[in-house]
Length: 78
Image 1 (cartoon, rainbow, N blue to C red):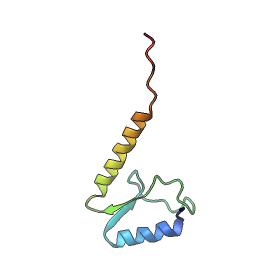
Image 2 (image 1 turned 180 degrees about the horizontal axis):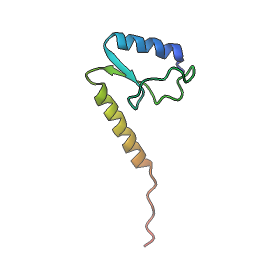
Image 3 (image 1 turned 60 degrees about the vertical axis):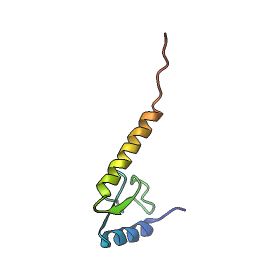
Image 4 (image 1 turned 90 degrees about the horizontal axis):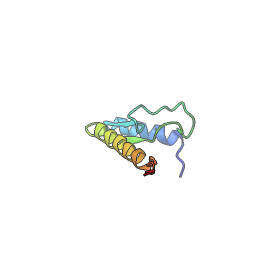
């Protein structure tokens, strides 16, 4: 299911009004000016204000681990 701008915007208002924080996966504010599908944002993270930073740190760590595991290992020539 593809969510559109109005889906994200209304969700963002609900999260923020409830005291939560909503950002992209890098911890940056969502950019609603990027088109109707928010395709240039890096995911969406919505969490309580008390744990949002921890969620972003976990996302960053997971992305780093994923990048490290997908890096080709050079074959030994010995």
